[in-house]
Amino acid sequence: MQGYSARYEAALVLATRAHRDQVRKGSDIPYVTHVFHVSAILLRYSFPEDVAIAGLLHDVVEDQDIPLSRIESDFGPVVAEMVKALSEKKMEDGQIRPWQVRKQELLDQLRNASPETAAIKAADTLHNSRRLAADLRREGPHIWQFFSRGPQQSLWYYGSVVAIVREHLGAHPLTDELAAAVQDLERAIAESGGA
Image 1 (cartoon, rainbow, N blue to C red):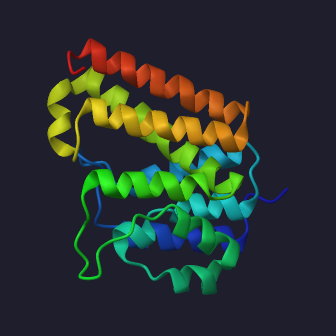
Image 2 (cartoon, one colour; image 1 turned 60 degrees about the horizontal axis):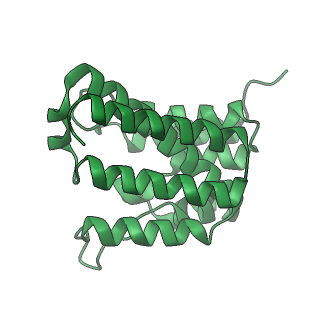
Image 3 (cartoon, rainbow, N blue to C red; image 1 turned 60 degrees about the vertical axis):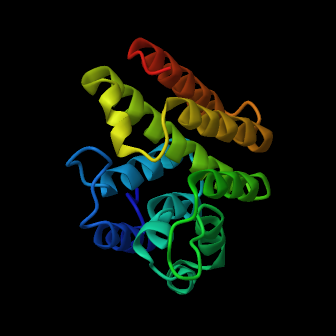
């Protein structure tokens, strides 16, 4: 029985090094724990290794400026294409574009992406929405100060992801788990007085 391949280990190392100095919004939790969770969710649902690797690397291009060409050379074109579809684009001068523009573009990319890419976004959104709901219940609505947008915009975005994932994956258990997590986030927002 094999635990994981050398290729998966190389992705773990790259993700760990790339996100070394990054923490989760509003906490001191290392950001890399997020990509570990995303990959673990994908493995739990028996997605192929390329998908689990892209789950580990889904933020390295967008957040850490790792060249997409490196992802392709180290992990192949399939992984690179998934990471590309999940990465928000920056302006040519490196500046971040407006939130609504970035999120709508990412949703459009996701709509045209592969079902496997949609699965990665589902796992990403699943972990983010669970974490956010837990933080709201523990810390209260002041956590929104660490985010670019508030509860209603976040619910719009997460709900849009659920709809697109459902288009790609149908009644897959991951889709159902994601939808339940977003519904729970909505309850947590209401409970915290943030809706």
